[in-house]
Image (cartoon, rainbow, N blue to C red; front, side, top):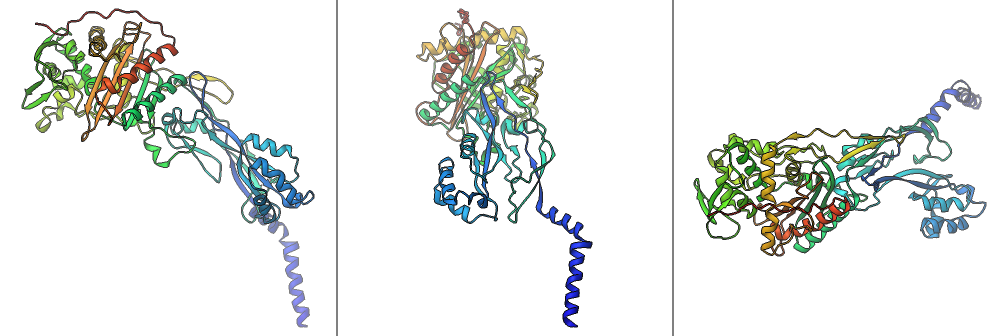
Length: 566
């Protein structure tokens, strides 16, 4: 009776499991074995204006094996055949085949390229399926890395997410929308090949086309790296911009990095030309001069007695180099980069007018590019130029007590080069939809910053700079066949560090021109003056850019503007 009772319990339980609740339990079992995973859309590409691919998505494959299916040809023989394409030792492969993660499934390689996948397919081995996946590739290596940024890939879903630069800024556009797929998994949560079932198709992504010109970007980065190494500097930024359109043709920096193998800490500091701030030094003198021309009736020929040191409103000011006291015109003050002259020019405008001019040129504000990590710089309102800061207006007149980005200063000179009209800079030319249709980015409208008369007066002064340095043995502002308007800058940063700048545009007599802005921070080998550190870089990049863009020479004659008067 006891055994009969026990058997009846077992039979009853079997009837319950196999009969009454079989459908329910079968469904629960399937749910436990099924996993829903996203199918990432192929991330869009990023290309330069000339079609060079800067970032793209390439297919990779996960190589798996079903050991029972390979026993027909022998596990040892299969391992030997797979060793070549996988670049693995046969014994390592054999060990995995003999001790799989589950009876019918083992991963041999998480990611192989298309060539390797094709080689494995040609082997014709049964039970070696390839599971497709994707990886981000940067064909140019570090080319434009600071601008592009980088992505991180979720190991569980395969979805890439932009973490810096353009990859982060346009992540939604480049990502598309992932699809969904259901598949059975083993006890180790590994997908079982052949059980996939699509639930929702992925929505293809779009691609970006930039205004960057790949050859100019490469040359600018090369010159940056060479000069940083030669001068043992901390950083270098070079920007090449087309003033009439606002198109950025190069946004270069050094040091840089490999976006394919990024360091997480770089996420907030990848784009040096937009994120790092510094004192602009004498390159900012044109802004105070513009205010004096516009608001105080001054002209390039207005003159001041300029000693090499002057006690002004309770503080001493010094020029970079000793010189006898002379009566310089404003054109001469700009050409010879005289701090003691510019503070006298600043006295002709009110603090409010001077501040308004700096803001009109875009300082103390974002440029409009909208890239991650961009800084607006630091420009204190004129209302705060009191008390201990009462002399700030004079310090700002020659580029101290104000912090800017390299992009902001390039934008200042692009405005001057464009007749006094600021066209907001842009880096994205347009996007390409998943269907292949190109949609151009609508350019922003320009707006006038200074009058045509003031602009013409500034250019006439800036045109005097290259000849002045040439007579001093520094030819870096001269480009044969082209009229160049330029300005150097040497600013004292924190401690004993200096910032060296050279910004200019050519041809100065035409609207079809280019601006090249060079800034090198903390050179510690040799000179720290802008003309000697940044000048050679400006010269090389400007020549290359003009030739690449096929901008014809103007053969212009630099107008005579007196730099000193009796």
